[in-house]
Image 1 (cartoon, one colour):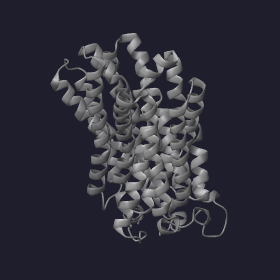
Image 2: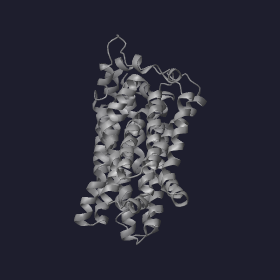
Image 3: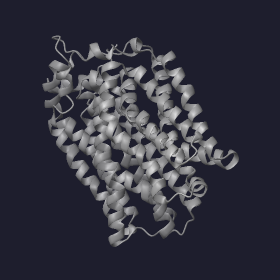
Image 4: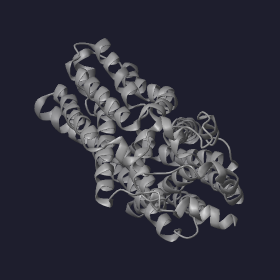
Length: 435
């Protein structure tokens, strides 16, 4: 009985009644806005040298322009996702995209540092909840058996958008000036923001969020909200995902410096090689998510086994790679390590979706995002920097992959309780009802 219930949580496709073609249109538009989100966020990095010269800015001022976006995302992801779950995800996503796109356009019109700072502040406000609410919309239009694939692909969009934002931003700045870098990102986002609510309709992709948030007995949404932290498995999914991203974030942030110090690469070539490593990590999110769904259609708890395997394999490959002498073989092994290191994103996202109520999926993924930032994306680069100061960046990179062992242990804890937790939540989850 426990196995049947758990399998149903991951494999029951009966809740999805819309056409597959329309589902992919929803995915394409939502993914396109995610690309716009990260292009608008990261285009600033491409024009740092030009802003520094024109406005005589310090490095700390430039860093603050970047950091204010991350700060607002960290502070507002949870409350704004909760509001979107209550008042409608589609219109919320369109409003978010409109806000960050107009704020990006304001960056291009800024006359001084203060104007730019205010504009970047609103970029952060607009982008704060997009990732969590966007993936909730995507999951609502596809079968549950595709959750790992879709979560991995959606999270990879952030990496692809970051690379595209820096690349196209640099090209526009070189030929037209830095203001056009922001304008180009803004126009792309505005077009998609206007198109999105015309194509994606709330009544076609799911029940209105407010009515869905009411439990079967007519009571308020308190019971669905409790599923955010109601089981050991879902808490373990948050923690395991964050710990594993600690490794990926550390490598992505510090790898250009590693190439500069140990390969004597210039910033241009180091940037290109690092971009390839970042894209490899993004590809790993997608490929490992697909593998998880394909191998685990009839046994969803195998996704957790694969998450454990991804952690341990990445630990082995990256530890080995950073013991090797600099050269092409080392870069190849690092690329393979990063391909697997990001693979837990899909299984972790599927676990969160399976173990929380549909009406609060946006908030659930906001919680996952918060855990990813607090446990991985924020401390990973910082701790690596501290270790590098103490023993050198090469030695620091030899130690960082060991965090994956801790992530694997957390996922193992989730596996021990997964069937029991699904069965315990079944009475509430039965009214999950996708369209």
